[in-house]
Image (cartoon, rainbow, N blue to C red; front, side, top):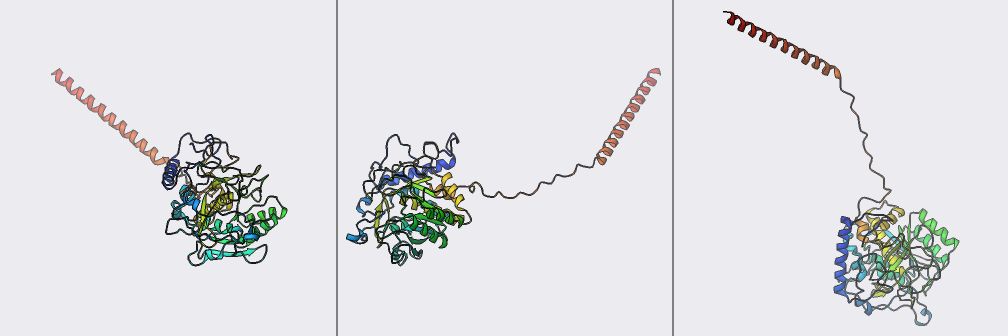
Length: 440
């Protein structure tokens, strides 16, 4: 597949492309060994894949309990029960993205990422938790309690998906395993939210020192308060990442804050590389890749994801919210390498290094392509717009003094003339001597 950076591009693959394709091919081989081949949801034979396809999620995914964006029956059944299972292998999304190849350049250290959702289980930040020593509990903008209580479990799942520590058993690891997570709860116990609650959460994230903020649950309708909060966060240098659609259900129109300018809108792809379907069968299904009429900037793996939930065990989930968390983790990696970059520079790097779809850009379902964590972290030179190095002025020497040259030329001419006169005189003398001998 030809990588394109726009409507026009180089005719052949670059050296960087060849290295990335070779790495992606290796990832495909690893996944093929880990799992049986299963068709990706929503994939078709005529849909161009934005990156080399991985076969399917490992079989362990089917054994893990599902994690939903909401918990509609919370009043009847209570909060989500902890998982008693753990994954003992890297999930397909991790093999596909290969974040460990980018970790020598940055692991997210020194970068705070806010997770705006159902909260983050406080136990994940203690002891042997996936976020041990790297979890900050921000405010809960609705209801009683604090952001360390996660009844739904979805916020904990997203937090460990983007920043979970690397386990010793080769299980799921976060994209930025040294980033700090700021938990901001913006939902009720069932996981539902509103534009006004999101607005409060975004402001809290910006005031709490977050460089990146990921939205776990989007709002179905816009609001002036939310638009103002997006501008407030941008003014404070926060990169806001949001799903381009809801998880597990079809949207009737754009969702927010992804629908606002300046927000990085992320859609979901399956193991085959195609956009996720919009079947919306259940809250734990694949969900829509993007809402109708909505904007998509980037895509990322969003089906069959694996990460820790409340209580420490592993869950599996699908949807654009998980894809947004992965992109937020990629942004944290970039900022740990280049802490002086602005949100615009981070977005430009993520877009310019993404795997391109075989269509005009931006693609309605995939935007500028599927995020490439390794290329984003390792690409050189810095992103367009970085100041150029100053160069010293060039000093032009004055023209040479021609006096000495003129004198030397005159002297050489005089010497040549003298030599010629002497030569003529000698010739005349020899001729005279020959005539004298002849006369005798």
